[in-house]
Amino acid sequence: MSSKEKLLKLNLGCGFHAYPGWLNVDKQESCDPDMQVDLEETPWPWDENSVGEVRLIHTLEHLGSDPRVFVSVMKELYRVCRHGAHIHIVAAHPRHESFLCDPTATRPVTVSSMQYFDKQINNEWKARGSTNTPLALYEDFDFRLVNFKLILDENFTRHAMAKKWNNRDLRTNINLYNNAIAATEIHLVVVKDKEDARFALATPLNLEPFLMYVHQDLNRDRLVSASIAQSGQWEATESTVVSKVVTKLAADKKRFSVMNLGANIGWYALLCARASANVVVDAYEPVPENVAIFKKSVELNGFDDRINVNELAISDKDETLELTLAPQSPALARLKPIEEIKDATKIQVKADCLDNIFKGKKLTTMPELLIMDVAGCEQKVLNGASKVFERGWRPIIFTEFSPAALNAIGEEFTMFKKLAELKYQFFVISPSALNLSPLTLAQIDKYYVDLNKPKARDRYLNIVAIPEGVDVKALIA
Image (cartoon, one colour):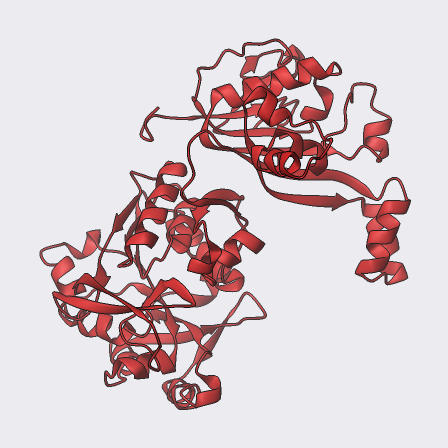
């Protein structure tokens, strides 16, 4: 199935909890499902590779008291799902009364039990001579375990807080007592094709989790890819503010346009597209291997018609640039390193300026939000947008502010002064709270001096520039 065809989103065993936009399926007529299907009877009434997302919320533990039936359910789930399909499971924990007291709960569904359906884990068992049954190898299916969470019982949580248990105490008592864990939340991805990138579950704080690709070797990108793979997040506070702003601004519009410069593997572009169904993103990234991974994530999420990925650097003119790739994280590039790096790799990339990109375009069709993380080239980007600003373009701007990186490029530092002349006001995203704190030009100039000092060169701020007339408080309320 091509990425442009509509993939099904199945809510299997929906009960009385239907989700808009999903095909809600249950065998009980009294639940009023969209389709009445007994999942233990195979084959299911959906085509091979026709499903992109599946929810099994308190469903899987009720299926297949006979192991052969349960395996046939998993085989059928694998058949109907396409490569990269996201399987979201929530199951009552087998040592909780919600499982023990339910006469229809037939089998434990835990992180450990799902490992039997993961070929990668099965092959590890095989290599070390484990006696675990390698079901994924026997049945030739592969559900990759990408993320899980234990949901603690509310009474147990209150007791733990009252006793002021530390993590060690918590683990000990979870193992000792029933009714400690209420449920297990598990995220699987269906693997059918050869992998040249790693699946990761993105878990932004105020949006539904979604799958994306990151670098297969996390040493290629020890910042963005590693953070997403290990924690499900990148710049959690900043991302939450961005997604809240996008959701609010897009709420009453048919189309809301975002431009993402220095998009890397696509975190912020995907976040914006996830925040609202009417968001479109023009993304620019010059490093080819990042672009390749980004495009895979766009296809995986079905955003081909809403995210446009351009392999291009944005600077102050149409030119070819030489970028330096850092040996410790080769997917990250700088126009000029802060200090000379031994054995650094150089690549040639095409660049252009916003004045050229927007030439002839109407202001009403131009991006209303600009997100920039261009490794110190922010000044050059704004220098190359002078004509379009003169025409009246006034997007909200989220920008990384790294004085050491800006200084390394060698441009005169005037970007915030120029924006102030265009009636912009400035705010810093608080790292400890989801709010915006006002910044004056004098404060920004002081930060520029202080963060250029040798001991502070790795530090940066995330600044929001908001044009005159925008209700700042309403953006993040």
